[in-house]
Every structure is written in C-alpha cells, then in structure tokens.
Image (tube, rainbow, N blue to C red; front, side):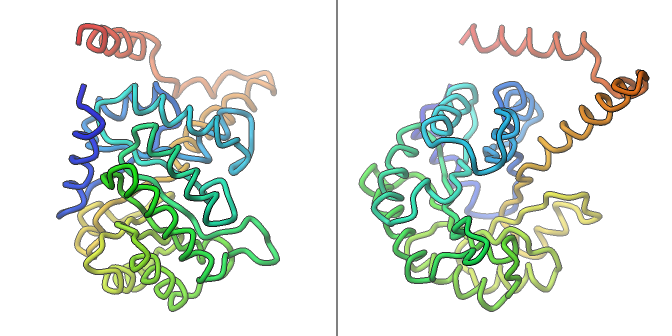
Length: 279
C-alpha cells in the first residue's frame, strides 16, 4: 500500500493537468469497489456517511467523522479527499485545530465550507471566511504542507446564487491559501466557465450530483480539473433501497429485481480481501 506521503503526492499530480472524477463512497465496501473500478482518487461524503449513521447531513460529531476518514484512508490505496464541512468550528482558531486533527488521519485533501448553518445568515462574512481559510492553511503548513486545501463557496447551495459574489469569495480563498476552488451548485456552461476563468491558475472542482447529459469530456473542455459526486451515489443506493422497502411494506417483492447478485458481491469482496491480506 502506498504511504500517506505518496498518496498526497499522487493527489497533487492529479490536479496539475487534465480532468479526473472523484466519486464519493460512504463506507469501506463502497470505497473498495470504486477503487476496483480504477478511480485514481476518492472523496468522502458528509451526507452519505451521515445517512448511514442514521443522522441528517451535518449532524455527525467531529471525532466520529475523523474516525471515518482514518477508516477510508487505511482501507484504500488511493488518495482520499475529506469533506470536512465547516471545519467543525465557527472561529478561525477552532478551524485550525480541527484541520490539524484531520491532516493527522492521512487524508490527501480536505475542504472547508463558508456556510454557517444559520438560515437567517447562511454565509460567514468574507472576512471571517478568509480568516478561517488562513487558519486551515497554517495548520496544514505546520504539518508539512502536503495536504491539499479546497476552498468552498456555498452561495448556490444556501439560496444566494450570485455568481459575482461566488467568484469574489473564491478569489479571496485562493489568496488565503486554498489550493483548489469549489462552488457546489453551479450548473450551466456559462457559470462553470466563468468560475474556471476567475480561479485560474488554481484548479476547480465541479459537483455533478444529478443525472447530467454532459460527459466528463464536456466538463473537461470547460476547464474543470476534477468532478465530484457528493452524496449522489449514496442517495442512489438509498433510492434502490427505499423503492424495494416500500414495495415490501405493501406486500410485494418486485423491488428486489435490481438487486446486485449475491455471488457477484461475495466473490468481489472475497478476492479483494485476499488481495489486501496478501500484501
């Protein structure tokens, strides 16, 4: 298995050119299967993991989330990017301490959001958000500086779909030390290309958490460097489960028709486990 340093170096190299997909597992099994398909890096999903714990998104304790990151890092050979929500703190000092702990899990990258969770005031002021980003940068640098820092502008997700404000925030986060920039919620080619242009030379992450008619090649042509799926894969799994469960509650079994074959899953995990234990 590659070392943490090797995974982080690989992750940085992936951001240097081209476009790659960063799918989001929510447990060891989904992570191992995605790695098996050849994805070069994976990202955690705060929502996917929260749902698996019987909690809403944003309601998982910091220590539980950190343990989840360690689990994903230890279970895979590829870099793991941590969906670190708001850094589990409101003030810059708290964010710095959380980031220090997150880096220690072995993740290759981590993101910090600028949302507050307060519907009346959904975003931190730019000044406070920048201070939080600088604290994250300082914590990463103190640990060696090889963990990628992703700055997230949540405007489109919290009911403030202002592209100009989004770009102002992303530029400020880049200046504060973010290595990669991310504005979840933008969808149109015009929005995506505007963000890519404004963020340059920093790479941009695009969230595609819905069924899109566009392809990875289409988004790459717009200048997107990496594409994540967020909680969409977990929600897809939940979709199949809910449909089958509702039919079962009605006394019908048709929802089981799309179930993955037991033999296929058992064979995959048996061979995967054997491969891991032989190293």
